[in-house]
Length: 70
Image (tube, rainbow, N blue to C red):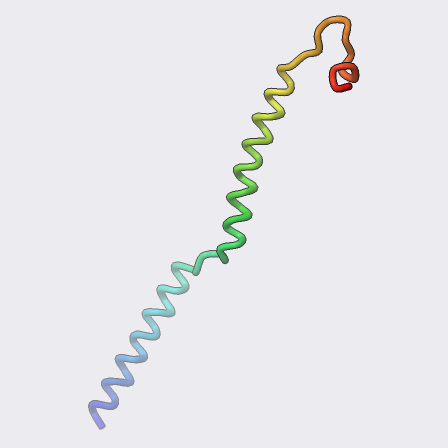
């Protein structure tokens, strides 16, 4: 009987430690949401560099922007 009480106490203690650790360190997001977050982060930098580069390009004198793309 005493051995069974010790086992129960140990199990309860392990469960409380696991619950405490789980509350302190929540599980990470699912992999797909992490992938989307990384892709969005990379795309935002790529888009910013494209916008910056295109703002530096100016049409030559005498040409409108429309003529450039036609």
